[in-house]
Image 1: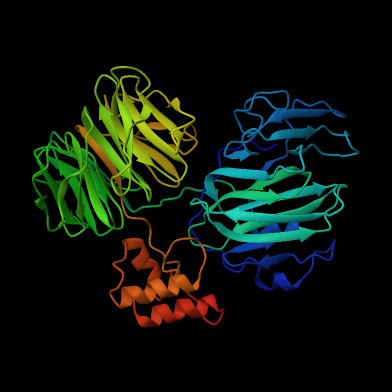
Image 2: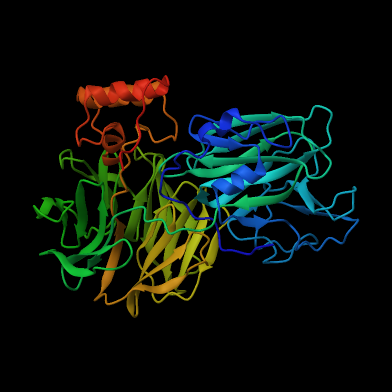
Amino acid sequence: MKLVSMIMVIVYVIIGLCMSAHSETSIDSDRPVCRQGRALTFWYDQAAFEAAHPGLSIESWDLTNVPPGLHGYGYGPFNSTTDNECFSPGAIIEGINVGITDCYMMVWGIGASENSTVRFGPTASSDDYRVDFDRNTLAFGTRVFMNETENLLHIDVYNSLGGIIDSDTISDISWDDPGTFWGVSSDHPTPDISYIIFRTAYLYTDFFSLHEWLITPEADYVFWTEYSMDSIARANVDGTGVNLNWITGCQVPMSVTTDGRYIYWTNWEGTIGRADYDGSNINQTWITGCDNSDGIAVDDNYIYWTNHNSIGRANLDGSGVNQNFVIGYGGISTEMTVDSNYIYWGITDYHSVIARASIDGSIVEENFIPASSEGVILFGLDVDSRYVYWSEYGPNNICRANLDGTGIDYTWITGCSEPRSVEVDRSFVYWINSNPDTVGRADLNGSSHLNQSWITGLDQGMGFGLGKILCFNDGDVNNDDTLTAEDAQQAFSIVMAHLLPSYQQECSADCNGSGTVTAGDAQSIFGAVLGLDSCVDPA
């Protein structure tokens, strides 16, 4: 087995992978080599799949503890940390989680059923076979085996938001070696294959092929506040080009964020500052009347910030300021973040906690996630589609929990130095250390490529922010990895000024890359849905 670090996303378009092959058949069966789906390519020929995706990492289950001729059992999910009768820690490559919680999995040792390779799968006919990736991946392939008479396998491929990108069905699956190959690859400029569910009875696999790591710059810049210098700092996304005085004249800046059009930051002295994305047109008092504001967040509709004893909110043009949008909690508020459903913020006192409220400000959960111990200072806070991340000043760790607050890991990343702000994208987790002052970074498994001094030379960094997401003029306006009539409708709504788009929506709707969304872009997107036109990033 080839041991590698976890899966990386690849930012480029797969051009011509299937080409004319979709009309050909595999040399060893009547199956086609591959099939072009809505946003994915499905592969049925292992040699063609591997030729199109060189440098694959292989998980063949051959480091199992199960002796030849025998079976081993254990509850899922199985991953690189699994320690049971089937596998020891490190025996499974990093980056994959196989099976679901409380799903009983079985390993067939070589020769247990005249099999020449180790096979692995759920024990019960009612259990789906699920494969999760720690990071969205470009390509995945496996050999499957079934011993049921129905012999029909339905497969759903999901993105990081939990939506089905595309589905596939194969039949006449062999139980005998070498089994039946199935693979999938992304045709999207920013591949978003997050997990796969095989829906069938008694399915087993004898290997996985995973695309090798490549660095993924998902944004163009990173930002942080230098509170003792009263400035906003900026660096390139690879950590170079550090400018500690990119925006000056702040008033003890604490946190920074962006929506791709503007940079926003909190001034502890009681204001929200704003500047154009390039750092021009600085306004240190864009919103006033705040109270020791620290955390800041922005979504497609509003900007939010923490006051000493409340959460403030305003429209994206700075109007409609409500300094008490959420009230009624004690302690000193620290960083905050939002997703489509909730507002999250840290409360620091003797019993520090992460609080959460519905995105409309109702249903406040003041003790959503407790700190690891009394007296801990909660500084950084961010969420993605699966987890909540935060830093604990004192224990000096980066912590992680499931999005519902369960599965808390207080020592997810250790060895930090008085950590402050935390941010995540689809590739990395970032944090600021304060003794010495550095930016740390690691891959999303929390251990690979861990670097506590990814950026050095900070003065007294506090809040960290990521730049705008790379722009792709792909027509996927609602960002669900599929082109539908809804995308065309949203593009037309942008043209008619009925929809105020986010940066990413406007970029996706600009089908021809002209810099302006027009009726022609909406028409091209609708044509692409019907297969009569195309909407492909011109880059």
